[in-house]
Length: 159
Picture 1 (cartoon, rainbow, N blue to C red):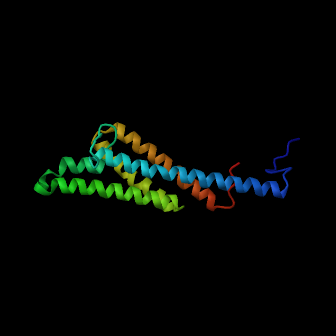
Picture 2: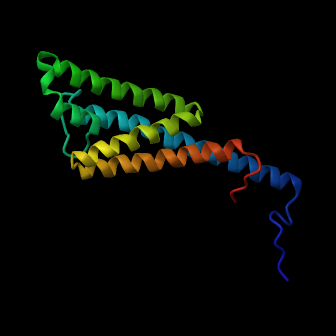
C-alpha cells in the first residue's frame, strides 16, 4: 500500500529546509523574469529609433507603429511625438522592471496588460515577428507574477 501523505518520512527540520529552498527558488525565478523588462526596454529603444541603429523588422512597438502611420497629420510635431512616445515606452518598461525586481506583483501584471494591448496594435500592423516577441515577454511576466503569488501564499506547496 502506498502512502499519499506529502512529506511523509520527513522531519520537521527537513520540511522547513525544503520550504525555504522552494521560497528561494521562487524568488530567483521572479527576479529572473523581472530582468525581461530591461530586455524589452532595450529592444524597444532599438526598434523605435531611439538608438543610432534601428532594427524595426524584428522588434517594434505596435503603438509607435500606429502613431507613425496615422500621426503624419501632426505636421512639424510628428518627429517629436514619435520619439517622445518611444522614450515614454522605454521609461515605463524600465520603471516596471525596477518595480518587478523589488517584488511588486502589480508590475508584472501591468507589463502583461501593456504588452497584451500592444499585441493588438501589432496585429493591426501585420507585424507577426514582433507579436511573437511580445508574446514571449507576456509569458515570462506571467510566470514572474505567478512565482510571486506562490511565494506570498504560504499554503501553496509546489514540490
